[in-house]
Amino acid sequence: MKLYVNFFCRNIAAQCAFYGAVLGLPEDEAPRSPIYRALRGPGFELGFNAWPAYELLGLAERRPPLAATTPVHCYPTLMLAGPDAVDRAARDAAAHGGRVLQGPFATYYGQWQAVLADPEEQVFRVACIGLPAGTKAPSLEALMEGRAS
Image (cartoon, rainbow, N blue to C red; front, side, top):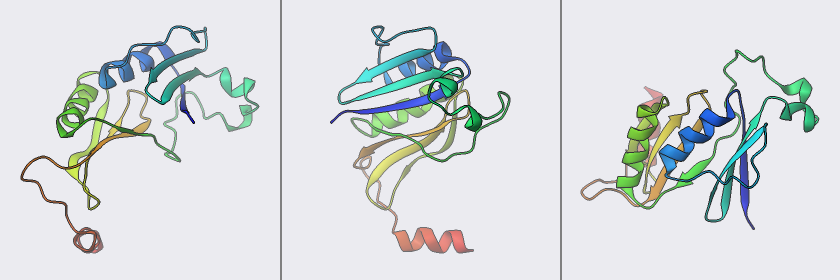
């Protein structure tokens, strides 16, 4: 099985370039069209659909206003090679017009991750299995207590 994740975008060329820079992936030019761009990695494809794709997919009534920031209903997590790659992706996201929303940080389940937003404010995570040397995973209980106060 191969996973394809597609984003609806206002500017498909800019979004494709942003994710390509952050993830170190070249554009796959084979499926390129006036309303689609894609990055291909091992076992996955990130696609970038222009606004007319809402109509093509029968989703016109669900298209948000062009100027609106869309709510977060789903987000991809891209698993990277290690903590250094997560740190680099977070720096690169900020350097290329995105934002670091949280992290990089240790999760209670032993991953190093960052929650990021792209230039169009769509949310995604980068993560790796394992933590930087000397970093301990927090307990879920401690995290939940901290949020309750």
